[in-house]
Length: 473
Image (cartoon, one colour):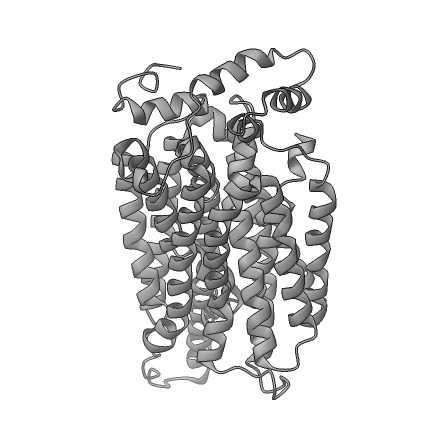
């Protein structure tokens, strides 16, 4: 477990860089900002969303790198665009440097998102693959929480400088990690794969049984045209659909614009403190998900996740659409004492009602984040690495990540304009509808993979959903 935790430092960096605009955008849009760096609505929308565009490019690059140089080196190479991006943002003297730096951070995030879940699934034992599969999401959440916490006290330039540390540390630690044993077998390096598997499982573990299972189900590399066969396109479509719905729930714009959202919602806390509280509770919820991943099952957690997100976004839709009625005319002033008492009571009542209403967006956001972190956050990463066939895993994971980040780009860029034009009501309503769709998608399309080996899962799709996967655990 300790060795595998080194891998997910790339996700820590992704989580940190994803929410970077949350504490810094209020400064860039304020009158006190450096005139060379001040942003209008369109520029702020690009600053928040160009990260996702870079991540899509990084996902496409990972398609080639995963098969050319392997998962391990692909993860290590992501540190290069990440470090350059932070340097540009930390020393920015104009908007172009901020935008390019943000784009490069996204490229690094796309590379790690396409490589790390696959790498973890291929080095993990099936009994702990669920818990380990949630590690990328956990470290991503920790990265976001660290950014929110540092944003309370650290200026925006130093936030960028601090982001370089985990990227460099990841390269150093990954140098001591082995290559994927499944990839080594696909390259014909059986002895090397056996040594790696023994190092991962321990000297007392019977590695020959696992190696034999992998070899029996080993397939040659496939071409792009072969991806059209049902054995491949069904799990790929499930993975793509999950990544698309994951982003359409609205998680990326909510995380990226959390402080501006809280400011627009008139929450009683300073927005930066509200964001830090949500980040902390998000970490707690993802820890619960990691504990339940191999106990409750993937589908049960996805059902729960969809319902919690639906209830929270539905409430946010109603809250953001409802505005308090203006106070009516004052009653006749029969006596000074009676008028004063009535006015005090009315003021107190209205104040309590407004306070309760202003806290509700924070509560609903916490519930939404909890629901997402319980299922659609970590399980989407895990299922992508589980259901994708081994022969197509490198290419398909890159396609899934690219679709995911292109969706996030469009949604994040349009979110700012939707809010400025219609208010928070319209995007929240869209997220509510998507939560219903995700509930149905889980019921119809997603298989239960708990306690199944990667070879059993692959056999599930190859045999028309009739063998192994339908048996009781």
